Image 1 (tube, rainbow, N blue to C red):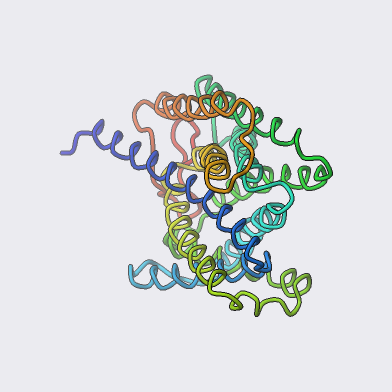
Image 2: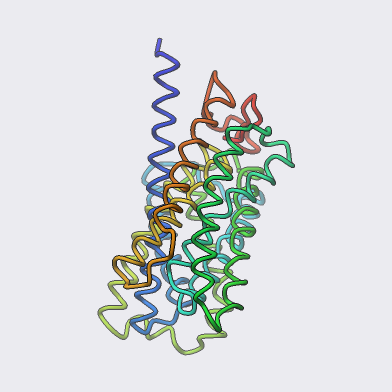
Length: 326
């Protein structure tokens, strides 16, 4: 019989690895968007086509893996709602990146963890655990410190700053919704594909209206084509592990990707894109890292018998005895 403690450590290490990977890829997707914008690509059309490409690739991958691929009323609802909640914050991020920079948009992803955690506690998916609260507050403090410093130097872009700060609430709602309404008869890669394709459908009216006649520009230069292919690859890997992480660790743990994205995105924006280094970057980064470590320890302390659980219900991922969704 396998040692339960070894199994728990392995699951915990896998979740942490997924967390770091997904958070880094989320930041990278915004950097690619900034480069595509600089190359003259229409922003919403670029996002829509990248999402379509990743959705098609994931659909093929789910078929190769022989995952359950039922399309019924439940999975259709899941696809449409999760797709809309995915498309809106990504569209806001892609539109705002020209005005506030990739670094600031990345920073906005530091905040969903607090909102998600508060919603999860209010809905009974989580219990109020002091160590997890401390981890959330440490990470949030680091994110706020970076965001405050960044916003202070953006004269004339305050409207975009406000719009970007609505992203965390939308992401948090999506995190909770996907957990509560997870269709047990469908695999995570298939659900990721459905979400992306539905997200592209939600983006289509805005892309075709606001960027009418500009879709052809995506093929107008080799640089834009390569960036589009790069974004498809980033989204494909990102959302495979995004849904795996959601499945094994639940919405609150998943929302830590924002803290990783905030730190990685800021570092990339400063080192590769030439954006100004925010004040207190070292302190903020240390707070984000410490917050993630403390939260991870709190995740184990909340349920000493089993830190992570996979979904067992046909309705949604199961919750642990501590109330943690997994």
